[in-house]
Length: 487
Image: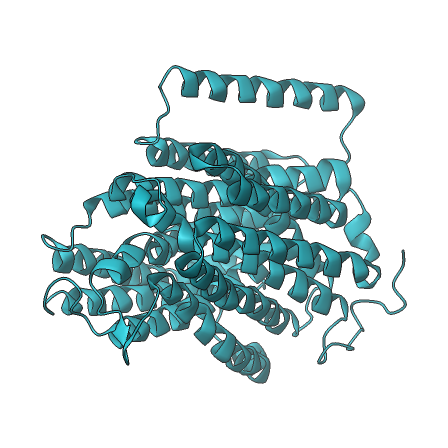
């Protein structure tokens, strides 16, 4: 398959390469399934059997959701390695989508913890492969220095959030009307639609996406198979012997992610295939990685702490109708869809006058600090089922403003700073910052108790985020110097 128009000069999709339309739609359907399932997952774990759930403790359930979310982004390492060494980004993306589909089918069909275990493992592995490769291919659509790049990633990110908007609304509705497994089944249908659409549009993707950048040798392939089998055996033994349990899963995943991130930085920085300028650009990414981790540790609490908050603290009777608490997972993506075009236009309009990436990262952290301080103030309002739901909507809008300064910009940055030999794995490093933050977000839920420490909990985390954002602002000149002209 070849493209009729070079991606770097192609403007057939609203001034952007036509391949962006395919990646936009594929990611939209994948996020529909991912967030549609995740919106009801926590409730499935801690709701009672009479409510259709598994009856777990809220803290344990939140830890599992956080560990699962962290594992999704941790799996980007495996996915990016497969793309760089075995199949290339384009084929890896397709096979990853198939794994996601099988995972959602497992949750829909298999009962109890069996379905949860099989489903979450398959979805995590597939999502890791798809996320790293989709972002890599979007980066390939643009030449170095193309001013459309940040705007293109913002448009791509709008597709992500269209799926994230609609998925929770429909799966949440099915869950309340028919049951959890129907909601999981709808997520599977969404992923199937994404695979069909991706297949039909593959000819518009850049030929570079079908190239394996750093092919593995036959000897290394055998060693890799041995390592994978050995790793699977070790994990099975740890589960069988009770070393890893559902109670400590979040801690284990957090440690693994931290070690993986450090190891990947070391591998890239020590590689003989990386020149001096590329190496300094990777060093510049380290403080941005840390700020990104802090951002996501707060942001991802919308699936743990804020999900519990919506279920227990909000007055969900709106105009005489009980709103499913899972619907609040659609608020944030709704406003991303509305505001992402504004940000894309703004960055394009400003051109080289727009704030540098480190400044945008700092604004993202500061925004999350403000959002959590607002949540701290809301802690003085009443008790159970007493908070006006539109107050939480307002907080989630602040989430959006912070997110649009960091998340799509971080995806773009990882492709700009990546050494030639580690393109997909640099994208994986950005996703590892999300993985670490997501896993910690699940663990932090253990410390949240609405009736005891709501205001101190949100207030302390808000102050920490503000301090981190201001600290990055102070170091912007040094970070930019190491980026060697990359904005």
